[in-house]
Length: 472
Image 1: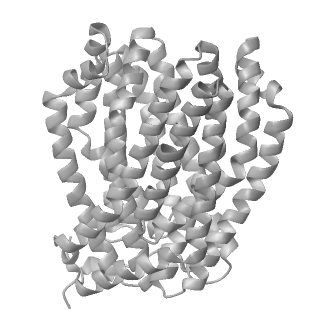
Image 2: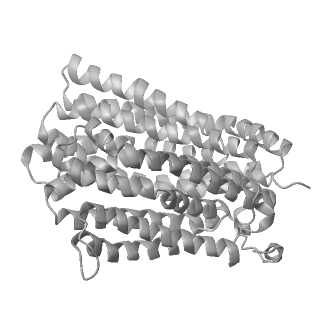
Image 3: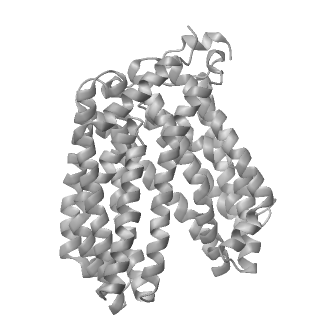
């Protein structure tokens, strides 16, 4: 790890700040979308193998997933701050500062994981009891959670390293590493869950072991890449310096990204209680339609994350017009995907819902909900793409505020008032969701068009330039 590593050539994606915006967007978006699909596969593989152990094991995995959302919120916060700052420095061609941001990411990940270790060692049973888990579920889930929390450093670093590379303009290496780790996880899952040869039978906890090992291998591969590979980001002795002001900017940017996720989760929980009150068929219909909605959004996450990188790097390169163009083009391409799908959802709603469940009441409620969702999908697309673009400029406050107002200040009151006070039942809930999607989409478009996010970017930039990462 000598200073000679500074002389390594860098893998720089110049298409992001030069050439056609369309090709730059799709080159980044396609691997990210493929990565999102692989992440779904990762989740389904765990569920498939755990499902062989019975309903108690599935319940343990389900409730653990709710609690582990805490880790994911923290990881999203770190990775959002990392992506924004690395995109900024890569756009400025200040590569050593980008390298140092990556080191700050490691420091923040270590601090967060130490907090998770304390929770894992002393708080898992209490958390499970808080969520109302039975003694059988607690027995299975507590070991799973303890392993995941204690070794959470690998989850933090895996997510942060991948997002850092995407922020630098490299989406191919994260995809390759994700493929490798998913294959390892799928191989290790049955070995540790059911036991085979010298592998112990660990039940639900075996899934956690497989996840930790696969993520640890992914982190090792990425570390080697940063140390010795042809990468856009390098590790060498010159960048291993803690910079508290820059770390503070990362926390500030990341906090509101995490807070936005929290607001969505709270909205979901409040809505779930109302939906459940209308019976099992309504809950099943909601589950089917929301899963279809998330499938459509998965493609948007790919384009949205690509948009965030283009906005961040072009603002760093002082190409604000190209940054704006990146946002509008990403939205245009996503709308071209969403609008035909929305038409299909609206026309063939009963047939689509019946594929997942043919219960008459579920199909009736679900097809109505799917048609409501179809009408507002273009607004959802606007909020998703432009929100990611704004985040890429380092402005995470405005999207969080708009999410809070739309989903807690509008969605929940409208849904409860229309469903209960006006007696509209499930249709009132669907109208509540529609109202928040429309409001959030229009608000995000207005904010992006007025360019307030650019002002926020220049405020961040002025602070960063007062505190250079690498001493001159």
